[in-house]
Amino acid sequence: MGVFSHSDGIAARRAAACGFGMAGKARGERALKVGVVGATGVVGQEMLRLLEKSPLGEEPPHLLASSRSAGQKVAWRDQELTVHCLDENADLGGLDISLMAAGSDTARQWAPRFVVAGGAVVDNSSAFRLDDQVPLVIPEVNPEMISKGPGIIANPNCSTIILLLALKPLWCLGPARIIADTYQAVSGAGRSGLEALEREGSGGEFRPGDPFPFPIHGNLFPAIGPVDDEGVTAEERKML
Image (cartoon, rainbow, N blue to C red; front, side, top):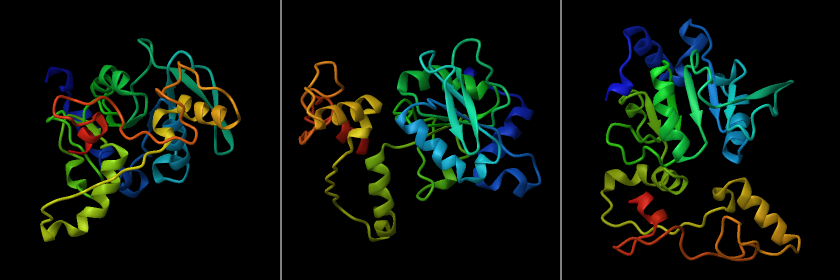
């Protein structure tokens, strides 16, 4: 694919970035520069919390988000970082790894651009999970796949990750059938889902504009997402 073409210099830089924890000072090189896309969202905030404790967080990350969040200040250790707008004027150069937590549409539009600019991308959305050219990686399960692909690494969804972490030690036994039940957090719907839960739990009313079709407080939905022609829900399809 032409959009992923790159020079030898960029390829070498991306290969170093794809070493992740092995890169940086441990390799006698500069610390990696990390970008976080969707830095003000629920997942983006958790990424920042983990980066603070990670070797990848040796340097402050470059924070990017939509125009609604641009200009906000985000706490990072003993300082505040400014959130920059992800738009046509955004400077994507200089980032070795970009962690994307901004949804599928944003990932499809921007992940290839980060790659062209010379960095690797780890995408948390569903945008590339079914793309044969993009490795779908759980580090504890198939880390060898990290360096294979066009510079984008896709994450499976949360339920799939947890299931496969449990199954990997059993895989040598050749399981013939797997029955999986998942109970998923309201936070999967993002900040708006958490706000709806908190409001309803405080006695507020259900609002039609909420991310859920029915009140969520004290409730349990039997399925997540639409049902396809085979009777499989969108959430089930992610695990197949």
